[in-house]
Length: 113
Length: 115
Image 1 (cartoon, each protein chain N blue to C red):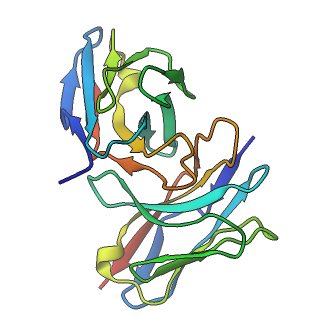
Image 2 (image 1 turned 120 degrees about the vertical axis):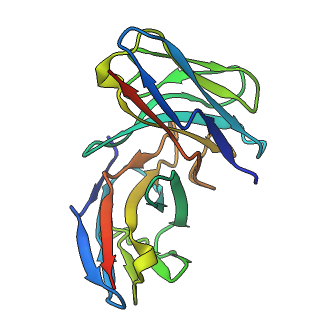
């Protein structure tokens, strides 16, 4: 079956540090890949997506590149802010079958001033 | 604002009580979903409705029922609440069954405590 593995958190950084949150996946075919962000007390919001190999999704300074050779979709940001503190979820949507997405367990990011 | 609206936002139930969580979307999406979120468990799919008039079980359907009332509304019912159902419940919608194109839009959640 499909699966998504994220690095365990929390990830604790100082403001303006470089962020990487690792995500690897297992899936058949050519899934679409997503990053969602959940701020405290809120629902998940779609942050970025990529639908095919070598695509780069980007939004709000965050980027992730769909690497089929390494089955990865790592999230990066060059300079984090306190307001980026949240839980980040990697997810994949299958290219066929039930289409039901598979989510990772989430990685908490804490950014200190 | 357009999006997914869930009610109530908070609820405390006694064991054995019943309740219905409401969800409505105004984006003309075809597919709707109910998830629960528990610490360390991530998101688990309870039920989904690929289109109006259809519903299917997800990963953890036991103890729940759903109704796709119309294209906009998708409710989740707990017939006899148990402490194990203490969780945060999220409703989500997508434009179509193939969520790979557009992803999900989530509601802000219902925080349910069963005592």
